Image (cartoon, rainbow, N blue to C red; front, side):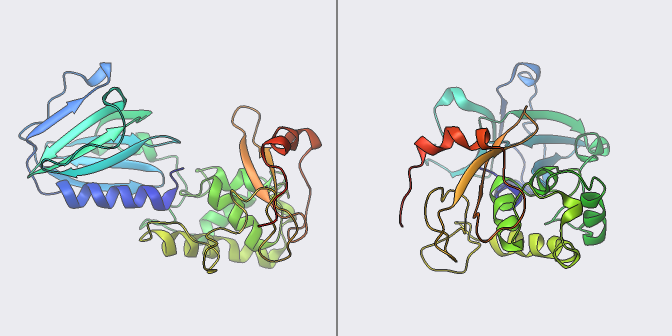
Length: 281
């Protein structure tokens, strides 16, 4: 599940492989851009903006991609077998200097004028891993809708950019509140440290191959993906339920003992109970 740190790593891989090089191949397998050929153009750079990727080329063009849930960029050396998925899932190929970047299952792929990138990313809040990070503005954005559940506010990229479902669950655990607590009910000291804590987690993981939030060996995450397993702090079984606005609900994990605040409606957890019977490890 790509989050801000995953996308930052993807940008670094693309930049390291292609920046400053002249393209020897370009292939875009979406109908709108099937005839676009950037062969012979120099790749200037690739940067991450929240969960968006911007690859810039000479001539003032930018390739904007977004991974969402299933997308991925893979970089291969000359002669290396492509292992990112079957050929029909490939949406983009960029090759230069013996390296080939292949975009799989990209749900968003579009070309923009570089001068118009804000059309694609201008709505985003401060980027947790970007040069525009502003903790005060991020907190103000979150508090602007005090009745909104904290988990939903954290996922809204207009508030702050880079948090996905994993960090949402982990941040709420570390703050000791449930994801259903209204933002306005968050204790003042918790609210004050939330932006810094979010930034600390993403920065700590941007260079790691496996995401880690606990500092505990053999346990990478406190609650995410641990439904029915004992909480690492209190041994109460971790719970899971859907959270969202109805159009985009996502499984959300929390410890009912360590995290204070409202619980989800009983029906939102029902479908998970049979899938995750209680476990003791």
